[in-house]
Length: 136
Image (cartoon, rainbow, N blue to C red; front, side, top):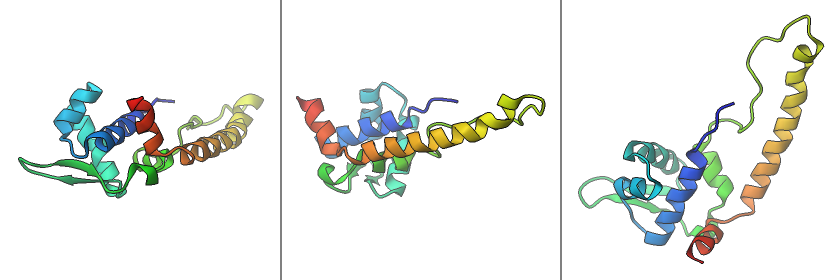
């Protein structure tokens, strides 16, 4: 299982945009301490889902399309993460091992439940709450 930083990066971007209204990918990358290319890739996903709009050019930048109070962390998560957070191995089970033959099905059920719990919790948190805590 690999860990993705897309969600944390996306929440950082969305929080910064909520605080400053319009920012360039270069400024966002400096804030996150990463390269502008990564920021642009995450921004592209946020744009595709309608959470952010971007304007190119010298006076361009990105901004939120809605008020932070109307954006949930679940929306951000679903915009940038591809597939579930937890995944079972895609390897063929070892036919002579009872654990290997059955573990994937067991874990799939547990992982599905965990993903639903995560999404439910993320749906209950608005971007405006994150902004308020960051500013506190």
